[in-house]
Length: 413
Image 1 (cartoon, rainbow, N blue to C red):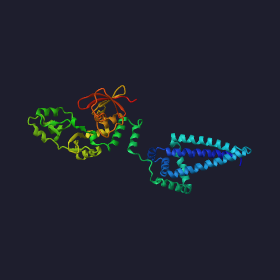
Image 2 (cartoon, rainbow, N blue to C red; image 1 turned 180 degrees about the vertical axis):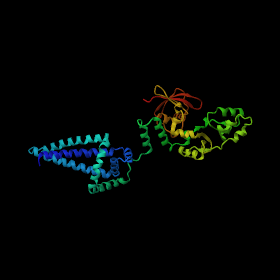
Image 3 (cartoon, rainbow, N blue to C red; image 1 turned 135 degrees about the vertical axis):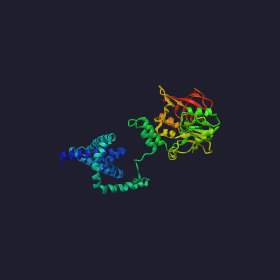
Image 4 (cartoon, rainbow, N blue to C red; image 1 turned 90 degrees about the vertical axis):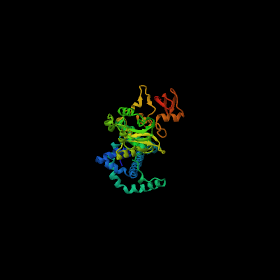
């Protein structure tokens, strides 16, 4: 056989080797979610590619079978060429092997690198070649995969039951957090809030007992009327001396109609009240949202296992877990300063602070920043003290007798 033909065959084998190497990387590097999207759009190449990737063991068996064949054949041709050119050189086969190895290495790495950067560029054309080739060589590929799958089962891996495309919640949250160029930050926070609904309870988002604004029936009518007229809320709990002795909830829209009438008294006020709703503190947020919707109510008191009132939760509180600052000015509780620090109201919940700042302070245990600080230092720290709060440097700005009120999170690094 002429040398020109041998060199032509060698060049063809090297090109095929580069193709098989690059196509393997491109097919395995494809974004499976983008591929599914293209399949829904009836993209022909995407449809073929998805069918091949449904059984990656067969696809990889085919590619490696073909790649090994062309590599071995190329080595044989290179040996023949070397002997024809330098028959008297004893070391020519070793030299030819070394040169061919370097050449094949370059021709393998180049397409693999390109395929890793732009997988669709090679994967989609390759799918049209591998589909008929798999049918042609299926008996041989199937025979090889029979032993491969048997070995995998011996180590506890079932190829047919393996699913590589599923994402857990934490992985999905990471994808959303890193999608900075695809959507505004407020929408990313909204999606992250939805993913967190499953793990959040009403205890995480409730208004604490000491911050509940209500009306004590033991107060005078003048005080009660002033509280109704000046209240920023649409519904108020009505109680006797203590929130634990709740009478009902007052919707201000009903009360404001009669509040200026001379006949308006405490009994008339009681007649306007709706029945109080009690919510166990461990109730998941998404469950309570459905209850509010089905029972057509918007407010309830959160109670512990002993029946004592721990806080208050409204439908707006539940919605804030999803839409965040779209309905409330959450940034007023954590304000970013010019030097990169955050000035934070210590009454803010840990979940809300994490959502605003994209931090990862622990949400198991204390629900507020004040509670987290007190748990760490085991006392109420004085103003000016600096602590390391789970990796975040914090300076206490303001406190009172019972709690930390204002802190500054110093810039990291």
